[in-house]
Length: 328
Length: 139
Image (cartoon, rainbow over all chains, first blue to last red; front, side, top):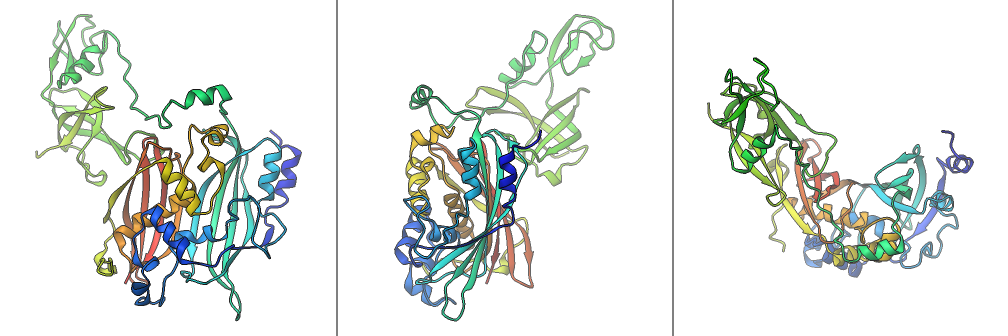
């Protein structure tokens, strides 16, 4: 799909550099102390003058992660400190806003530090519009990833000195799901966090015994009552004699790793990653797919002896057989 | 405070896990973190504004996440290490009522520059809020 015309104006600005934006305040102890208080940072380098005097800095320095905060405009949007450029380094975001993409979220913050900054230093930054991606649709909505590179300097009589750099990426978008006022009211009583649960297994007359067995802490296997052949996964017909008659037996839960995979990406909640999943050959002869626990990903071996255990998920809503390595 | 131990380069090996750090996410933390980082964007302090942007509640700003990531690494490394960089990528938002748990490990060491690279991750109930890395110079 061809891009709308206004986007070509936006793209023409990629590579452009914007002038200085000054900090309202010099690097100062009260703002540092409050930042440390909120973040729970207790490194005395930032708040204890006596300790800081013993370091290579000879005095208090600002926490490195504070770098960007010094130069933000504060309460009034776009109200930059005196001397700052009249250009708006974020003008492309404004253009996107005017074309129906009002929402923005920060995605990447890559800070690099030349050195720590000391009390009394006056900072400013310059901005380069580094890149604008292709239109993307994410869970949040449809829009563009915009990358800005900000270079931070300290003003010095002998020549300004670069102290750090920030590569900042935001997603500027049209929200997929803006609640109406009424819906927003409904949400007042709803919790903000909807815990993501494990998917529930589909259950049929052929498979119910397996999940009910798991709930009772038993690993159940289907057996043909005509020829005694075991089968898994459950099915209505014997794979050997084609009989429809079956019952179940409890497996010992002992077996060995026949094969395995380790899931790394994409990371889908609520699973932990890396996520090892085994194809277990039970001593009774059938194979079963289940999660592996108690083993590091680089220590899983084909043929490793394992034993079933039953783990409870989502406050007991789901019981799953998992396999843990045991001595041979 | 000065007795606080710092890691030394010779103490650290690739694969070493950092102690986990669980951070309860509250309206207070989100609000005060935004203000402490001079970020007055309405989505970080005004629930109605956040909902108009498609979020169920106020959400943590990226500068607070950076600060908490610094804390997580520094709590382990001690006051004498120096950050060369701190890179983070955001995923699932931090909303009030959730808990974010940081985990991390040493992925690389370089004896010549006494630098150590740490990979970090902060998970909440919706998945990864933050993944990232920090490069540290150690005494």
